Length: 96
Image (cartoon, rainbow, N blue to C red; front, side, top):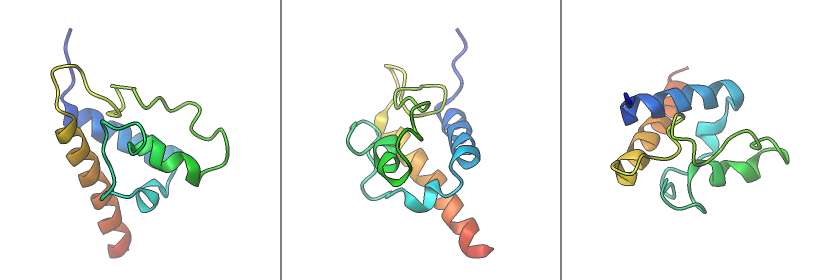
C-alpha cells in the first residue's frame, strides 16, 4: 500500500474544507487545536459554528482528509500541519 504523505493529506483536507466551508479557517481556534483529542480537533471545533448536520459527511477519523493519522504517524505533526493551513488562509484573507 502506498501511503500519501501526511502533509499532502492535510493540504487536500484543507482544500476540501475551503470548498465545503469557505470560512472554516477564520472560525477555527489554532491555539486550542489538538487533532488527537476529539473535543478539540478541527471537526469538533467547527461543528457548533455551522447549521445542524453540516458536518454529517465529515468523519473526524478520515485519514485521507488529514483529520486522523495512521498508527505510525504523529498527532503533534498533524496538529502543526493544520495550524499552518489555518494560518495560510488567514494570511491570504489579510492580504486581500
